[in-house]
Length: 223
Image (cartoon, rainbow, N blue to C red):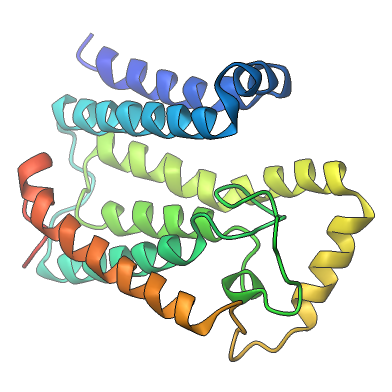
């Protein structure tokens, strides 16, 4: 029973991310709430359940798998900085390949920006977040939690690719080929000023997380 809350929170988390996205369920919710209402409600639900999962992992029995070292803090800070910058560049931007964007509206294949390197930037940000938090949390509950997120980030792109490719067909193939032939550097963002502004937002978010982390989680992320 000591693990019951942790396992229950994980089950609710994955159900809450799977059921609302089923085509029939999502269509019914969007028809009732509207696209923005669905997006807002889904985001709030995801954050609330994620908070519960993290709290439940902290209350689970402590079973150490590896020890703590000073260098792990720097790895976590670097990983979180990367995650914040990538998320800031990706959220709300046109992306026909993945979630978190505007369903591809306004996407310019000649200026893919971050999408030149990955079709799924938010999954990359999630993987960085999970991997960064694995380093200093070497107990069984947290390794299971962040390991599952890291695994989802690595494998989730294939599932999203399959769904989007089935939905878009030849358009998906054409857009992906166009993305691949653009120069690796510079990545040609749709707007240099917009990309710079988003990077600034990512830096601010990272700084805010450093401040609120000890208040919310109870542990300072700083050395």
